[in-house]
Amino acid sequence: MREEVRDIERLRHILDATNVLIDYKNQHSFEEAQSDPIVYFGLVKHVEIIGEAVYKLTAEFRASHNEINWADIERMRHVLVHGYYKIRPIQLWETIAVDIPALKPIIQQLIDEKETLG
Image 1 (cartoon, rainbow, N blue to C red):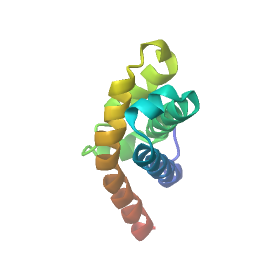
Image 2: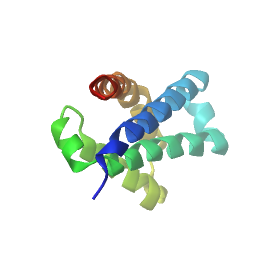
Image 3: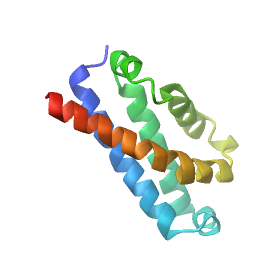
Image 4: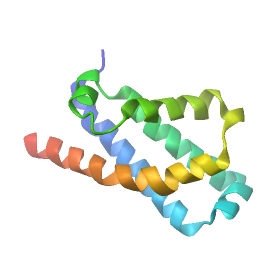
């Protein structure tokens, strides 16, 4: 069973990864990111980190915050780790361009709420 005290830490991991992804997305075009294996796999890794952190959140926390589709995030992590040969770069890029910026303020709000409640 996962410890609830770790939920805030996992949320911070997610927020940190969203910041890196947004920053690199703003520094590189899709073509640049796709053609540079270090940048490309760095982006993959940070999406994986988000998925792993989501996986480590307690079931109670995830259930109480169903405004986020945790299962989709976790599934993407599984594809990136176990189905690495099936990764579609444009789909990864769209996730980074659309889903990550939408996720960031929600995660920040959840962190703020947890910190306020102590």
